[in-house]
Amino acid sequence: MSPYLFTLIMEVFSSMLQRTAQSNSFKYHAHCAKQKIINLSFADDLFIFVHGDIVSVRKIKEVLQRFTAISSLVPSPSKRIVFFRNVPLQIRQEILQVMPFQEGSLPVRYLGVPLISSRLKSSDCKLLVERMDKKIDNLMTKSLSFAGRLQLINYVLSSMHIYWAVVFIIPARVTKELEKRMRRFLWNAGRQGKVHAKVAWKEVCLPKEEGGLGIKSISDVNKALMTNHIRSIVSNRRSHGFNGLNLTS
Image (cartoon, rainbow, N blue to C red):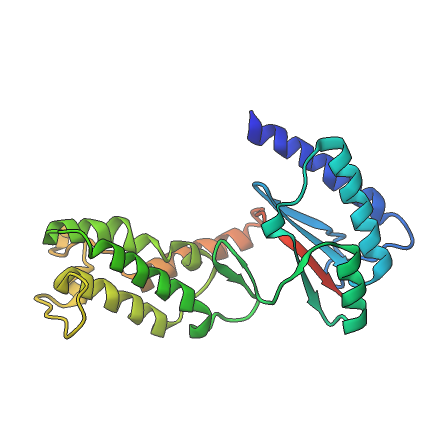
């Protein structure tokens, strides 16, 4: 029952925000005024959009205080972050005095993925590569057979990029880096040095019934997921979002 109750409560909060927006002194975020969007929610995460001026921010603070008094829910201290865009320094400082939040830096990351509107760059995927390195380092502490390493690649390493691949076209350079680490883990048990592959990686990624090992190609998975994402956009399937507080002028 808890998730359903939380959803109902957040609907009340959204209604409170929309009612506040009817005030002449409140200004929408520059890119949200046409759709009249103030907040987005995903599970227990909340993202609020508002114009970067003191009056509008105070209106949001009043709503947060009333909502806290009603529900006893408060923002998580570690997630109370405000993001500015084209807001003068003096106004930023005044806003931070009104809102007891930490100032974050763009781009915003949600579940480890950068929320950007531009094409994903190799530098944006550094965290993904580092996460795979860390996971392989942890797996290397165990004594694993070839079959065991294959299972871990199929069910652990091959799934680490999925959340990224659903929303972004992963750069070819990053795909090669990830697959290089998977190859090294499969044939060299993760040890550095030249990979002594017994079979070409293209053959390894074939289905088992075609003579491969069933490891899914990262680029092929990315293409399939992006195709599904495009279909969702074309069919106007609704989606949900995020966490934090975003301010702009």
